[in-house]
Amino acid sequence: MQASLRAATEADLPFLLALRQESMGPHLATAGLHGTADDFMARVMHCFECAQIVQVGGKPVGLLKLQRGSAEWRLLQLQLSADVRGQGLGRSLLEAILDEAARAGTPVTLSVLKANPARRLYESLGFAVVSEDADEWHMARP
Image (cartoon, rainbow, N blue to C red; front, side, top):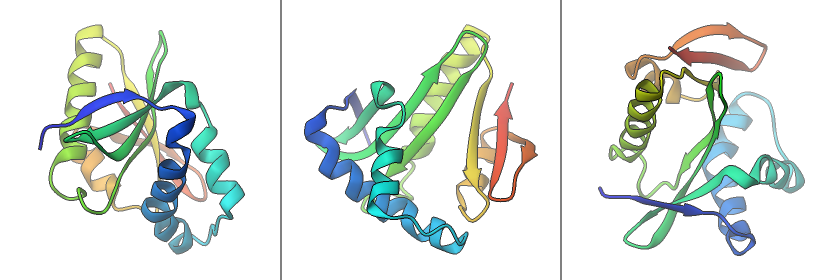
């Protein structure tokens, strides 16, 4: 599945809010962290300047937020719509990021809800848990 990325704009906010609710709502509920629409929108707006829309065939299917710092790159959010999940798109996007980070000699970090099965994907790509809190695993790939 071939994807492209473009900068997110305010026009994408309805899509991003619906994506957040659909992709993260069940994991948050499992973790006992029920979010309101305002909570979901706050997370959508967090670091919006680095938000990229994942597109397949020109259609928005996801969100990628990656902060590229000098000491590390931080994967803030990677969310895909249900109709493309499980088809290798997330892995492909992550592999491209990890290849670029490796060439730059920069580690990549992320946090994942303990209730989110995406941890298995991250581990298969070389991420390891470096710490945890009550709700999340904090992971890094050197």
